[in-house]
Length: 321
Image (tube, rainbow, N blue to C red; front, side, top):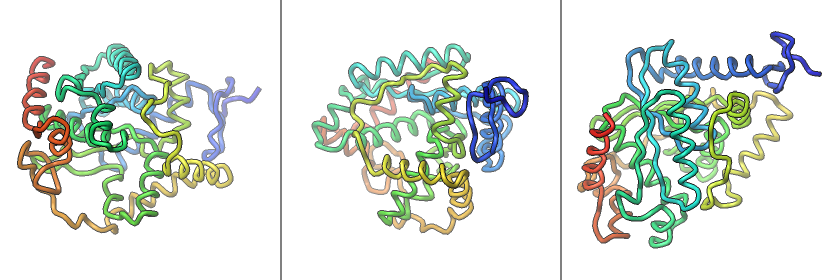
């Protein structure tokens, strides 16, 4: 039996980059300390701040909320959860159930935003009608709704559940495609832009995907284990993750080195060439006269629905509060 290095109990995980074995209790504390250090190092939160947490129902955002709920008591910040029901038949229902089970157990208010109630269709229909990849449409919808809700809630930041492996894959892909302007947006923290966009933080910036899974299992955190049916079987991001997983095995800690150095050098990357502006329909952030969400809904319904959606979100928030 392999023993925990700290207490001698049975170990459940080997942390190669830390050269240690840990039991469930000490592994849990290890991850929570790591997230707390990231919150402090990257100045993600301050005492008294109000944070929205975007939670999908998957393991990463569920673990993020679970950890933040614990840390909020000691660090003095407030939480509210946001879930976007994307209307994916047979899948979204499971996500809503997992999210409500978790937020209820933690005593955290949760705002469930149903895409079908707002635009009349789920993300699958939007992708089919516009003939765009489902993941592309999903990204437009989630970014818009999470930002719109966060603005109406008046939060200081919105926490996103991207883990270390996700961020490595996204930034490395951007570098390969020479989309260098996108890289600063994927750092541990982005700042708010008055009345246009709420700042984003990534508390799991230095937490590996394998670690979020183990944390969820040993702490019995409810999450949906099914794969999204609209997700492609293989993508460039998945291949990049595989490459870095192999590198990590032979060079433990290489992922953390990549991420820490990336965070230090974000200011060296080029700023967006197109200045941000407010969408002429809904008033939220856009690089063009009309934002991506308004263009998407106009293409599907014949009307740009951003302003109507924002008005409906205000009603949802009033009822929640």
